[in-house]
Amino acid sequence: MNLNSPLFDKIRSKPAAEEVRPDNEPRCQHMGCARKGEFKAPKGRDHEGQFFRFCLDHVREYNSTYNYFAGMSDAALQSYQKDALTGHRPTWNVGVNGSVPPDSKLDAASLLRARLERLRRAREASATAASRRTVGKAALKALESLGLDETADKDTIRARFKELAKRLHPDLNEGDRSREDKLRAIIDAYNYLKSVGLA
Image (cartoon, rainbow, N blue to C red; front, side, top):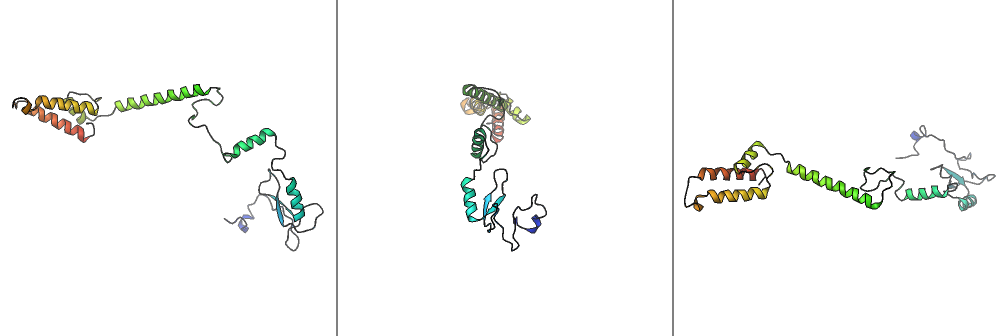
């Protein structure tokens, strides 16, 4: 973006403060000096982006006495230096997120206990949510055929399937095929539970 464009002349809030000689050269702004003002010198903290124009001798004199922090108290200077560490952008303490009022005077141990308690509650909530998983009707029916409810985990389902398969398999029951239909139902239920990721 070209800030020297004539389009910006109409929207500038302050006119340029440079005095221009008839031959289009800026004049030194030091009192009583008529030389060319070739060098820029900042006007100060409250006039960011504005400059005086001085000749070489007067710009040297001005720069030797220039102090950006002139007029600031020690507290204001320290505050400015602290804000300069973050580029004068607002910052927040990590992990607090407004859970502790900023005016409260808690020590580090109290803050740590409060954080640990929040973490414990969050873990309990996620464990409760995981145990309350939603099981569809078909999965619930498959779990019931294995003799389990919706809170059973993968290891419990596998162990129950192995136990029932051993109990009902004809080869382990001296060739008795009377419970073969029940075995088929258990195998189908277990295969369905595996397909939906519950076993």
